[in-house]
Structures are given as structure tokens and as C-alpha cells.
Image (cartoon, rainbow, N blue to C red):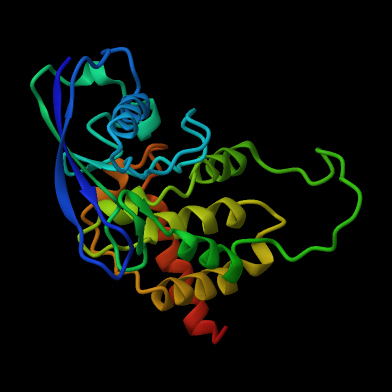
Length: 248
């Protein structure tokens, strides 16, 4: 496969960036998208050119580090898939592929395709936890949890915090991420006592981090690699309103 890449190149958040055209010849269709970028970088280095900076870690669809917008879609054209799981056979020889970073004010560009997503970590630090004393590991069956509640909690806990929902949202909202992180604790007994306070503090922190508001377009759900449901957003909104009414 011979491809033409239009890659966003930017030195840092302060300097302006631009799309740069890079030829990608002889690409094996069985490569993953990141392996393709590895090959392109090897050629750039051999030509004494600056390699493309992009983020990655596990390459197994677990960590969410491979945050790229490919032809205008976060993580690329396949649903329920991270960039590292996207294979080049999804494209055709001669295709032009536009590769950009996740774009949001809360995700400043570090370099090229790498953005700083530590704002998501700060939202978790504001309330995405259960306040309990540490100690020995309790028995798994010490606190009975109904299967339906456990299933819902696990569905929410599938969120890998990649930020694709933010990149897809026209308002750069992080509501799908926040609602998933709040819901997976709210549906288990250990997280129930702090449910309303958790919703209030995490939403407040999200606003502080300059994420936008949710307008229910469902673009976040469409690109989520773990297919998190927007039903969790409605649940978070209800908890947030109750927290305000309760004065928490």
C-alpha cells in the first residue's frame, strides 16, 4: 500500500502548528496504525528528518494512550476500537489520511500528535474514589452486590479515560468520561455514601478544567472505544441536581 499522510506538526502549545504531507510507501495492510507510524518514523530518521511524535503504551486497547483523530474521527473509522487496534487493511492504496491530535482547550498540545490529558486525572482526584481506610483485602463476598448492579458498575468501569469523547464532542465536553467514572462507584455499596458529593465535585472540577457542556449529540458514545452508554450522563445529571438541592 502506498499512502499519503497529512500529519499535524506542532512544536508545543505556544507555537502554531500545521499539516505536513508525508509519503508512506510500501505499507503492509496487516500492520496496525501505530506500526505504520513506526515505519514512517524509521524512514524519517534515516533521512535525518524529525520523527512524528505520538503517544502509545500498551498497544492492546487497554490504556487509551493512542489518542489520534484519523480523518476527522477519534481513534479512526472502526467502532469500539482504539487507534492501536486499527489495521491498515481498513484503508486502500492511494488513500490520503489526515492525522491530528485530540483537540480541546483542556488538552494542550505537547508536541505534534501528543496532548496533555492530565486534566482527566485531576477530575478523578477531585472525587473519583471511595474514602475508606486501607487495610487487609476483604473477602470478595463480604459485601453482597446484586448482579445487575455489578454489571452496570462494570460497564461504566470499562472506560479507559482516553479522551475520545472530548475530541468528538463539538463542545469538548468530558461528561461521558466523568459520568462513567462516577457511575462505576455509585452502583456499588462502597461508593453509595459519597454518590452525590462525588457528582458535585467532579462536575465542578470538569468545569474548572475548561471542558464544555454536554448538549446530548451522542458523538461521544459513537467514538468511545469501550462503547460507554450516554445513559450514564443522564444519571450523573440527576445526581448533580440532587447534590445541589441537598446543599452538598
